Image (tube, rainbow, N blue to C red; front, side, top):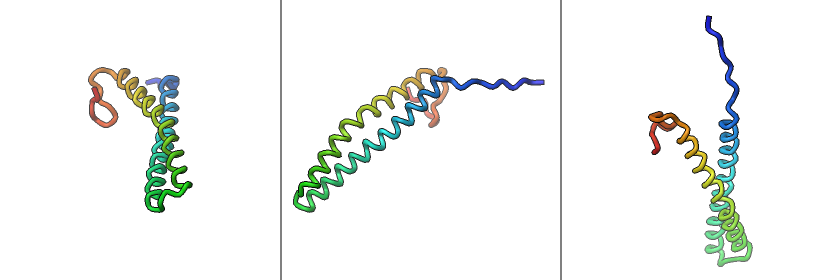
Length: 99
C-alpha cells in the first residue's frame, strides 16, 4: 500500500508568488497612469491646454515614471530566478525554453 506524502509548501515559491502578485498590481497601476497621461495630453491638445489637463498629464506621467521601473526590474528578476532553478532541458510554462 502506498503512502501519500503531504509536501509542505516551499516558502521561497510562496514568497515569489506573493512578490509576483504585487509586481502585477504595480505594473497595472503604472501603465494605467501612463494611459491617463496620454489621455490627459490628448484632452489638453483638443481643449487648448487648460490647467487641469496639463496638471493631469504631468502628475500621471511622473507617477508612471516613478512606479513602473521598480516592478519591471523585479519582474525580470523573478523570471530569471525561476529560469535558473528549472532543471536543465525543462521547458517554460509557455512551452518555450527561454535562454
